Image (cartoon, rainbow, N blue to C red; front, side, top):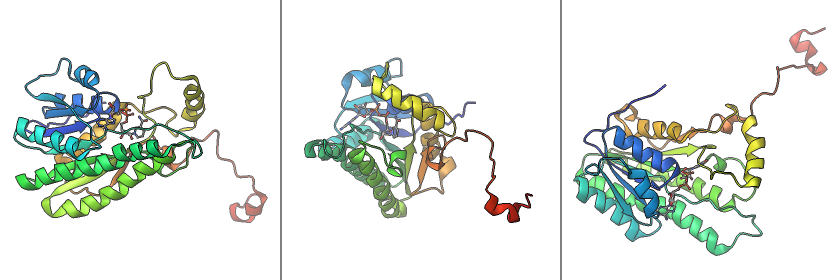
Length: 273
Ligand SMILES: NC(=O)c1ccc[n+]([C@@H]2O[C@H](COP(=O)([O-])OP(=O)(O)OC[C@H]3O[C@@H](n4cnc5c(N)ncnc54)[C@H](O)[C@@H]3O)[C@@H](O)[C@H]2O)c1
């Protein structure tokens, strides 16, 4: 099934667009008619993202979202190049894992600088440009399903993503008078992993995937379509919300057989003899 959106005459920023979900989002917004600024630290990856896209409507910028200078330059470039900014998708993130005993404070700080401070800096810069233009706008920030369950090694990553959820609720309130809607997309397990998979990762995923309610990883396109919905006119009454795109991972595990209740304590309830 394919869903189509029309973003003709809209200008969209996608950060972290050099690979993974960001690459797919940048390409899908462009295919839907948007003018797109694809931003990332990785110049080669950006080139690959934009290969075969119309250079009139798709621009790239090498920039670091964790610095105020980087965030401001991304927003200023989009406004200069396209004359407007309608949608800002703050997808760039890093997720190195380490146990709490192995985690180095500098690495912890860098994870927060990209994932949390970067989301704040981009939201502020994009929000200001949208306020100045006076036409409202959409900001879509990213989180992760790991914010609501424990996962060994994810101390910095999970907590940095949880912070983007709380921050986005505050931003949604502060920007609401300007008709700027701020929402969060929280993916579960999406197929952006390196290929071939490192052995330990392959083993972990081999156990986890069959237990997911939908028993498969998600495709980047399945995240992108929810982001496009949140960027579209179809979601005009949605702000401050967290949208899980996780195949049901957050609600439990796939049933392994039929439901049988043979607990004798409840014979009087069920009428079982
Ligand atoms: N893939 C998943 O299974 C999954 C699961 C949960 C949440 N997410 C979230 O989805 C988003 C995308 O995930 P992904 O798997 O596609 O990531 P990825 O690692 O494949 O890509 C992230 C991109 O962000 C860029 N980036 C990193 N730091 C940057 C910086 N300081 N400035 C600019 N660009 C920077 C990287 O160069 C890379 O191109 C992230 O926000 C992540 O937290 C992904």
